[in-house]
Amino acid sequence: MKTSIATVSISGEFPEKLAAIAAAGFDGVEIFENDFLAFDGSPTDVGKMVRDHGLEITLFQPFRDFEGMPEPLRSRTFDRAERKFDIMQQLGTDLVLVCSNVSPAALGGIDRAAADFHELGERAARRGLKVGYEALAWGCHVNDHRDAWEIVRRADHPNIGIILDSFHTLSRKIEINSIRSIPKDKIFIVQMADAPLIDMDLLYWSRHFRNMPGEGDLPVADFTAAVAATGYDGYLSLEIFNDQFRGGSPKAIAADGHRSLIYLGDEVRRRPDAATLTVADMPRRATVEGVGFVEFSADDTDADKLVELLHTLGFRHTAIHRSKKVSIFEQGKIRLLVNTEGQGFANASFAVHGTSAYAIALLVDDARKAFSRALALGAEPFVQPVGEGEVEIPAIRGVGGGLVYLIDDHSDLGRFAEIDFSPVTDDADIEPTHLRHVDHVAQTVAYDEMLTWLLFYNSIFETHKTPMVDIIDPAGIVRSQVVENTSGVLRITLNGAENRRTLAGHFIAEKFGSSVQHIAFHTDDIFATATALRTNGFQPLIISSNYYGDLEARFGLDPNLTERLRENNILYDRDDHGEYFQLYSSTFGEGFFFEIVQRSGYRGYGAANAIFRIAALKKALRPEGVPRL
Ligand code: MG
Ligand code: MG
Image (cartoon, rainbow, N blue to C red; front, side):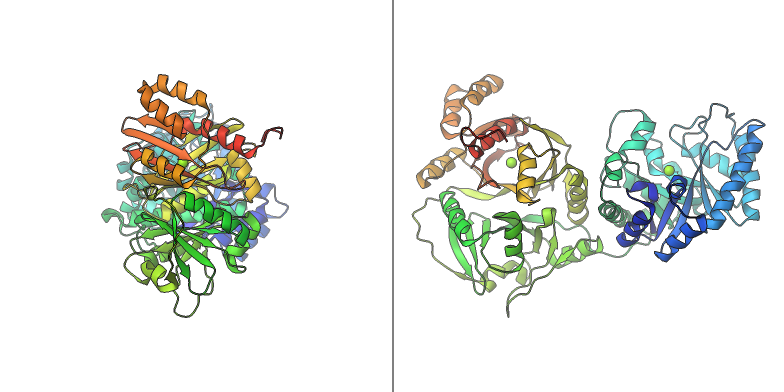
C-alpha cells in the first residue's frame, strides 16, 4: 500500500500544499486541475515541482461528463479528452479520473457507455495513458461502483479500469463485498474518505463534510478490507472535501491525513483476508489500564497554593524526587506530581501556560511498544535529560503542546516512583476524602483541532469515540467529544471551543493552549467525600440554589436527597444506566479546576449540568462589578 492525497484536500497555495504533503510523508499526490490552473506555472513546471518533492503524481482529475453523450457532444468530449491527455503528458502522469456523467444530456445504457470507454482506451493507449472510471454517488445514470465495474468490464480494454472511492460506495450503503470480485489489476486507484453520519443531500455532504478515515462514522476499514481482499496493494489516496480543512493549517491537515492512512492500513492488515496489504509493521493499539499520574508545572509561590488545595482534597505528599524539584501527592490510586524545576520543559511550560497540568502519564500494557506505535504514526517524541540511574519514561507531545508519558506495570517504568523518588512523611492534619482513581480528564482544544486529537488517541490507543455532545455555555456552544476505552479506565473529554467568551475559549486564550482544563476523581460515596472535604477546609464551587428546585422536579427526587445535594453543592444527573453525582472546585487562578464524581453505571459526563457549573465557575472568576467574561 502506498499513500497519496488529493491537492484539493488541504488549504494553501499550490507550492505550500506540496511542501506540506511531502513533509507529512506521502508517496504521491493527486493533482486537481483547478489547483494548477490557479498556479502561475506550466504543467511541466508543476510536474517537476512535484517530483522535486519526491512525490509521484498518482492521478489527474477530474474529467467530467464524458460517457453516453449524443452527437455532436460526443465528438466534443473526445476532443476535450485529448486536451486532458496533453496536459497529463506535460505533467508526467499516466492516470486520469473520469467521474460518471451528471449532464442531463447524457444517455443511459451500459453498452453505449462501454463503447465510449473502449474508444477512449484506444486513444489513451496511443499515448501510454490510462483512464479510471468512478461512479459518483449522484451520477445521472451511474451512481454505483457495481455499474461502473460492469461498464469497465464490457469496455474490455487494458487501458480502462475502475476507480473506487469509499465515500461514493459507503454513502449509498452499497454492498461492500461486491468489490471483492473485481480483478485487482482493473482497480487503477482507490480514493479514501470518511464522513460523519449526517442526513443530507449526497452532493452537499460529499463536498463539505468528508473527513479523514477514522475521523468519521463510515465503515472505511470494512471497505478497505474488501479492496485488499482483491490483492490490490497500490495507492490509497485521500480525496477530502471539507470546509474546515480548507481553512486549516496545511501542515497539520496533511499530517492527520498521513496518520489516518497508516492507521487504516494497520487496522486492515490485521484482518485475515487482507493480510496481503503491505504496511509497515508496528505494535497493535495500546491497551490503557489507567491514568498513571498527572503532572503540574508551577513556580514556588503557586506550588504552595496548589499543595494547599491538594491537601484540602485529601492528597498527601508521599515522595520527593532525588535530583529534581518534583513532589508526588497520592490518594487511592491517584498520583499527582508537582514540578517546580527552574529549567527544562516543565518550567518552559509554566512560562507559557502558568500553573497547569502539562503532562499525563497513561498506564498501558507495554509502554515501549506503545511508544514505537506512536512514532510509526507520526507522533512527536519528547526527550529530556535524566539523572544517572533514573528512569527514562517514553513520552510524546500531546494536546496543547503538553506531554503524554507512557508507563507500564511490567518494566522499570512502573517503578519510577521508587527508583527516582525518596519517600517523605506528610504530617499535615488532613482527612482522606475517599478518592479512588481518575474518572476523566477534560482537555480543551480549539474546535478545528478536535479531529486531530481524536485521531491521535484512537490511532495509538485502544479507544473509541462517543457521539459529540453540545455543552451550553452562557456565552456560546462548546462541542464535546469523548475518547474512552471499553473498560472505562481511560476517559478523556475533548472540548472544542469556537469562541473565547465561553469558559473553554477563555481558558485556551488565557492559558495559550494549555491542555488539561479539569481532572475528575472518582469516589464511591460523594456524601462521605463532601463531609471529609469540609473538614479539610475545601472550598467547593457554589451552585445556584435555583438549580436544585428544578432538579427535584425534573427527576422526581426525594426532597431529603435534594437538600443534601444543595447543602454540599453537588450536581446530579441520571441516564438509563445509573446515577451521577458531581462536585467541583473553583478554578485555580484562571486555569484548571478539579471535579469529584460518583458514577454508578452512568455513562455520560453531566452535560445537562454544564451550564450551571460554567455559570458558577464564571461567577467565581469574576468579582462583583467586573464586566462579564
Ligand atoms: Mg473520488
Ligand atoms: Mg467533567
